[in-house]
Length: 297
Image (cartoon, rainbow, N blue to C red; front, side):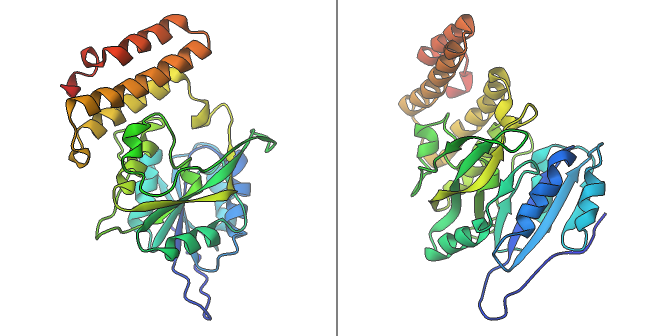
């Protein structure tokens, strides 16, 4: 179902259109507040596209309360990557901002990120610090956005780091050097974000906003709550893909260091949570990765 599109244009100044894409699957309990935080943005020129990925709760009922100001697309359940790609395909903005339907934005998020993107033609992506909140909206932590500049190689030097933070805190150029970058729908788990932003960061530089502009919700169903094994399996596939990317000019030593850092981080995570044998397994892989990562040879 397609409803009306929301586009407000400031006639006094040029403000490039920002496409805001909200992928949603069964998050009716959070959706209204998410949409309200987006409608409350101080930036004057946006289109809001909600992709409902086959929800079975009352998400669509809530979304249709806002059908006069957002565009609603429905599709069978195909996963968050497919939902985001659907939104990207039909978006009209010069810039794109993603917001998962369980997250919230500060009022000036879009305005501040547009300003940073316009400050330098080399900048292709802007991310921000963010608050962590629980499922009831209580603040439980804070993450500082510390990475900026040319981050392309940082994805290889720090493979287990979320260099640009969660997707809901990011804005990026839709078309870069004549190309539109899409999410890899074959990847699952946290890997899809890492892979997507790794490829965007090859196209230019990144800016970080130190003041938090995102309230990132952590709850039992969120991706931040996935267990270590799910995290590991998903990210292993994204590592394999990165190693096949000629952008980095791989050699044997680079591949070894890349896999070593990731496996060592996994070993530490398992040991910290008391899973001794799993931690030992990853420690062995860190020092002898090529038995497991045969594609590295």
